[in-house]
Length: 376
Image (tube, rainbow, N blue to C red; front, side, top):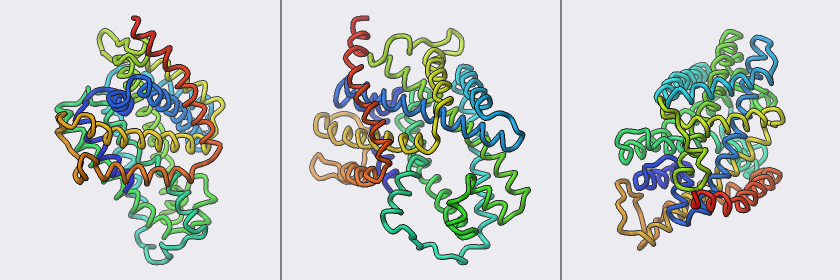
């Protein structure tokens, strides 16, 4: 529900500002360059951290399958993702579409394998109460965040004012349906205790319901899924950096594009190198908590942007407009802010310290980054 409400906010803003960059660009439009830079800095930092994390995950799956070293494989995955991003947006999307179909196929396989077990266990069991439920929801929320990546590719999209809002809402709806069915079938097929102990819970479900072959198939699909996530993180982070540079929120280096392919290779290179360094020291669980909290802050900022622009620029064209408002105050973004704040309160405290540190660093760098570009 929270992802859906925030998706509506992104849809309205993407229809108003169909430019590369997404949330930092929207916040800049409402609150100025410095605020846009701070949010963009946070999103770029977390994109790099996430890319490094999933690269380590990729290395772990490949090590499990063929015995290659985890760190070396993770660095190779980042290098391969960089190469695909530099080749072109069309090629990146083609690779992503193929891998996403494989991911969806893996989820459908889990649903099919576990469907016979539905009804064998209670789906309403809460061993850790409401606090456990909310903590779990806060951790898994990152799985819905992909729709923001759609908005970052607005400049590469035909008729973005119509296509982007539709794509965002479809992405949230399809994801929610698949995730819900996977959750139901997984917790029906094996106990929550067994799921909690497993390092690869979906493979565990496949092994329980379909045998060793099904488990190997799921592990192979997970390999593609982790690489796909890292690829999209680097691709959209490079586009976000490019969009910020075009708006004077990053140095000119980040808006350098290739002569033939027109891809922001300089931004992609810098971000890939940062991700490679992070991959040497990353902790997956901590990175997930940090990424989630950053997503919560970005979603709060985007919903606040919708509310602010309804007040300050009511006459602006909005090809997609969120329904329900009291005067100039849209009800859904306000409810989304309150719900997101409530869910964010269940995040990991150590992750909150890191995110606050990143925000402070961004606030300190903002005057130099923005002023330097204005002087250019």
